[in-house]
Image (cartoon, rainbow, N blue to C red; front, side, top):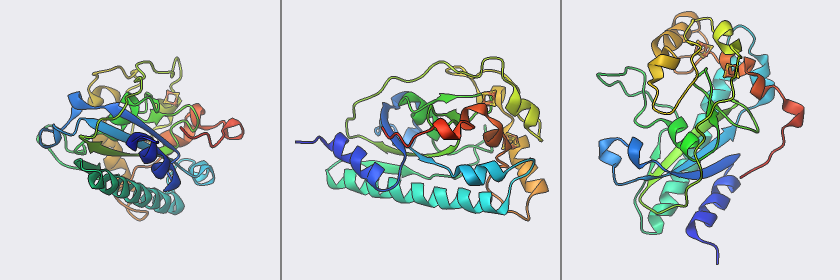
Length: 235
Ligand code: SF4
Ligand code: SF4
């Protein structure tokens, strides 16, 4: 008989995720979710056709796609959290895209999706601050469910694979990428200036939309360019 964890994975893929994995995120939780130490991390692959359209500026199509994929992620994580709850456990779906201003950080969420994604082994974190998956590079959006239902973990990925590459740093029009390699425990501000990134979009592309990012660093990353070799491998 399939375990709850196996059923959950199957359902999440059936509902539209491209990748799903589990992690113990106990060291990274906000105080009010401290009992929900297991994380279900999901990734939804973005449209290569739409990301390839971004050259030196975001597009209307990208902005809509960004919102549509966030809506899909919110739908998947809500359904998954309700399923877990039906099994008798607590579960909270973390919003796909929500900024919560704190005294320390004006541009953060209640929980970083890429933390769970990295801990669960879905990918590594690049100089762009984006999660880089082996299959799709950074061309994914992430979602997370926190729960007290025990889940089997996967090995997290400590290394990065940017090597000498600085393509995203050079391409970033806001000069928001410092060019430093990510390492476990690094402060986000050492890797990326989130304020500069957000302000660039809001200042220059308000006519396209607020609440998203320009997407150039995602477009240029070589790990996302190898479209022909990529397969819809799902884990
Ligand atoms: S989204 Fe745009 S402004 Fe923000 S870091 Fe990436 S390239 Fe720079
Ligand atoms: S563009 Fe280069 S430096 Fe930036 S995340 Fe991708 S591999 Fe790393």
